[in-house]
Image (cartoon, rainbow, N blue to C red; front, side, top):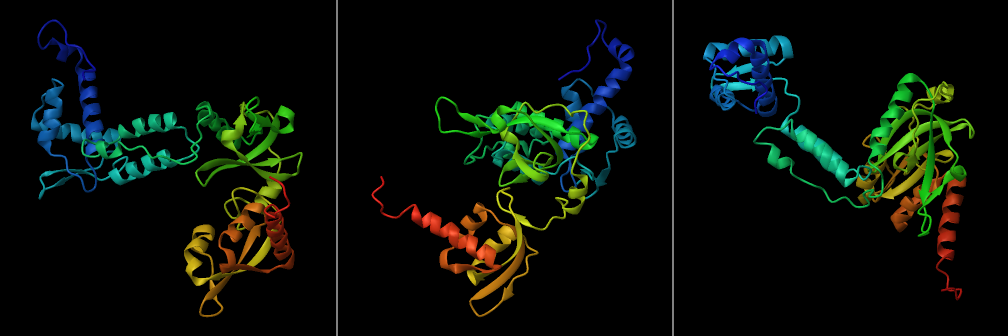
Length: 351
């Protein structure tokens, strides 16, 4: 692909487009090296010569070496010649192949990103891939419960949240929940009125994207699913509230486990598990969770947890292999959760 144009007279374009010619040549070399060279990937000089020949830009060896020096000085490319493999390694590539595969899989696996947007982002990432890597990026994960009805503009609108956080300002939006009604698919909170909140963080949880914000009306921090936010405003001319509360309960240091972003009252909960559930405990609470053996078959943990129905549902998943030991208010809430669930299945004649 040419980025310059030859003039009518043979060779005269070199005089008229000399600087442009050099700039395009450097750009072609930069793009090729960043995509195909790496710490363990070699690009040979002949490959680069063929690349330039395909674009009607043949160069001598000494010119190519001068280009390497320019790419180092101007673009910061750290090229290293490997005398054994007789080729060039790039010590600071934008991405290694495994990093691109990780990014593509992360995008494709996100329930929050629609299939169309995932394809679009993947296509952009493939531009950073070399000829030996690009085919391995032609993957599309089939994600259960991927959001299909979400407008892709929400992904872009989320950038307004980042701006508001950076500028220490509030934002506004409408918030909805899905409805089983065929006449009205969405049910809006606050009767469709706008939420005005102080945003503090955006975070991923189980493939979904959440806003962590201070709600001045409720006087507490709340989680909002970003894909259920509509008409996200530009940063509003009001400074954020909740700074003192956030400093005390910063999301990066807050240790209380929140299940499915469903907040509740926090307790230090002591739970007993059978030994075979160690993997499940680590998956839920992280590798730093302390597990103390109590006998040959069981261990206990004590963790700060915000009590909620999703927490009780998680405990119930394991049946008799898990038991909440304390505190008593949480034990009582667990009993109530199970009793109410059991009542739904009593044979009371209702169909």
